[in-house]
Image (tube, rainbow over all chains, first blue to last red; front, side, top):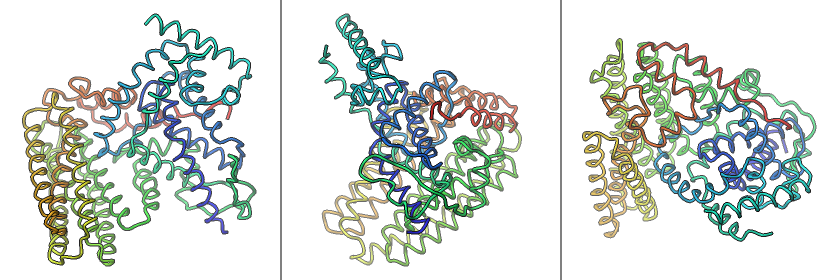
Length: 171
Length: 393
């Protein structure tokens, strides 16, 4: 196989990951930043950063976990910087706007109840809840993604659930 | 302790998805990005980058040649900044040549069929026109820039014609008809928008003239494409078996979707539209629906060619209304008292944009009359510098 073919193969393999995980990652980002457009940008950036990392010759053992790790870092980076970076130009395909407007309204309504509850948690607790219950990761994977020990993750998860249960009863 | 409600929550969360167009648009951007950031080192023998587990790597070292433009792009912006920033560039901006000459060309290189190629070139024409409209709005549409836009426009139009010849040579008249019809609709809509600028909104020196010049150029292209479309459609009607039932039904579906989408857009923006814009969109939608009904009758009668042509018309009319409505939102061309103040009477979508896009504020200031290009350059650089690699990678 020639170099071009190899490049093509690598591209195709990576795009398969994109097709498989874009929605899940979008959902994750959405529940981290609560803003559809920002979540989209984060997803785009996550895949680009990950590709860049791989293209430099680095190896990734668990690509799915790696994607979430990059996304997590981007969310943290962003909250440190505060001022959001605009990648809006990427979504300049105007014809699709109506569809996505409608989706946005619907998504907002659907996410309303969840957001309300999760939004009351602090960042540390929220991210473990999102990873556990929205993304479906086990405590071990969450520990890997966040770079924390499994024990820390379990404790945080436990506390988060306690908090959210109280909030739910109150509301 | 287990909190049962989470079961319900995670189920509900499954509805948070990217729309199909969003996902494919992002995919296109990703492909372009991957093209500009190829693996620095690859070896043919290590082709099994993906081997069942989720292990992923590019191994070993063979340097591959790269087009000069890509090398420059990589040198210019090691991160994702430049290509993102370039996407926002307008004619006259430093990064505009990157947008037109590099980013868009790369995306074009990923359209494998003549059909997709023609659609992409048509999209590029639209992007040129949207740039012109944005500049006209900002009072920055000068003679030089207008000439630049026109020459790009000509280039794209020429490529569309080449692709159309390829499509026709393969006997795919229905596809040729679709491409020409869609292109015609978008040109017509943009004519309408530029007409509004040309009609003498007071936006600074000489703009109206330039908008008028550009309008003329578009009209010439539009008439040309209209002829082509009509010829192709005639051939579809005359040669009865050239259009399969499936093709007509597909076009029906597309037309229905476009009508629905436009109707939704109209309903959503009803509160902010002025009477003229609303009436115009409603009229086009009514005509589109009539054409759709006509097509359905033909379809039932087994006249697939004629049905196809009617669905084309329905699609085109809805598309025209759609583009006009979108421009109304983006450019505020109907809202007389609204110049430079997007927050007033803007849709929710716009509000979000202005919240996330630092450039918006600057744009608004430009509207007040300064009109210089310097601010934008600074903005682009700031956006670029703002994008940093994630920690702990």
